[in-house]
Length: 403
Image 1 (cartoon, rainbow, N blue to C red):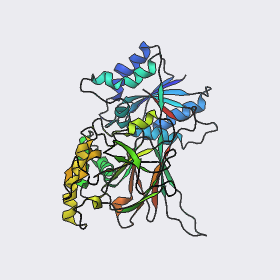
Image 2: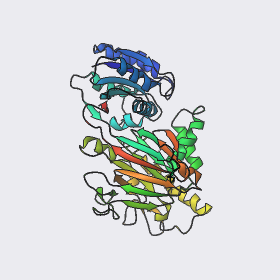
Image 3: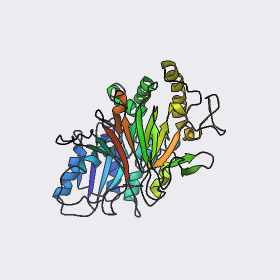
Image 4: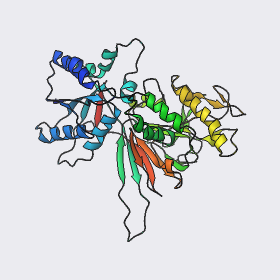
């Protein structure tokens, strides 16, 4: 099987080149793996062109292996470039040995949850070790297909083109999209995870007005919601086999879906039950985390003071996500305070579904932002965004991770 070695030298703390020179390439040599190419990316999207050019020139039509040193953003570029480059032959399955060199490395941390006693270098080599092992296996990735649609216009006028972005980790609106949008301005001064926390503080009092539809996944045929009492997912009260689509109204404080991952940082387990889906056969699913202020029993009206008070509760949710995903068990007491037991409404609506549709209020500018694996998309006026979970068409296509 052909082997490409690619790393992004400016990912994260810019240590990828040293990591590959000192550890990754010697490990491959030790196991008699000779790469067909070793390439450092030079610009945004370059990783996809490297792989596409290799596939176009190769006489091998089967799967290939790519040792990829990057963060989630470079993987996002690879997937999207390969899905947009015209090709006379279908893409083969691309098996990836990930080397975490980005800022958060959500996919890697989800597949290889870190432990306090891990050696920092050896931890980063786990996927490569899986690749060079005699009995290696790879886990197929599900994907989330995000489509930004302009408003429909009556003929003879033509509706504008749709924008498509495919994510392998996260698709979000509301607070998370605002955080990612603003964190880019902080990247130069702070390349660490701390810049996300700074951006969160800048945006945590915002609410986002939109109407939402949730669609079921194949198999259950209904939208499901996590029940802290049973510790599992049950049919959403508004979803039945005859009428499975769930409609939600805003405002929203948090709206984020994941695919393949249970965390966005090594300790930030925002969708703690999601990793189980990787081991399950069948239809892909999105794990969706929603926080809506109007579920708070103490809510009376939207005001600056109300938003400031609710921001503390959003902060409590995000803080609990760092406590091994404890936020999904939080409930409201009758007075609106947050408790970890009782029978009150859950603070977080933790949904498992096949897709969602987000139609923002036209006057709410920030509600028009969508984040797909760090890429920020903007919904046009009177437009909408949809996100749909997808599985590989067959065992010969798509992407898989050595783990």
